[in-house]
Length: 83
Image (tube, rainbow, N blue to C red; front, side):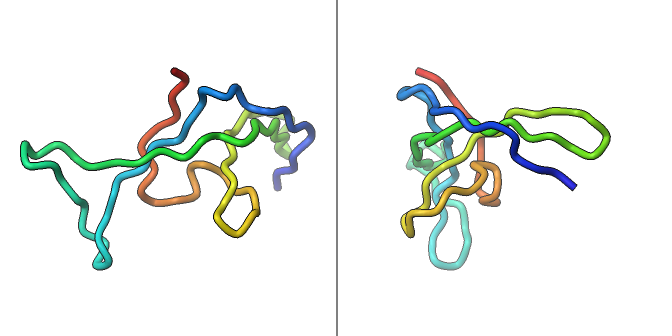
């Protein structure tokens, strides 16, 4: 089991990147073959604590419904960057 023990605001330049897909789930590509992608700002960083005592910092985004979720929860997740 895991629990969030602390949340802090993320830097304003931090974003999660995701692959763009069509309505069938197919990855969209530019004419030169590169994957199309989009980015969502990271809302906050959460410090998770696990039963074994280990800790991990995880990035969270704000959904269009106004909830927070892990940036990695979407299967189209690529990476997190800080510009």
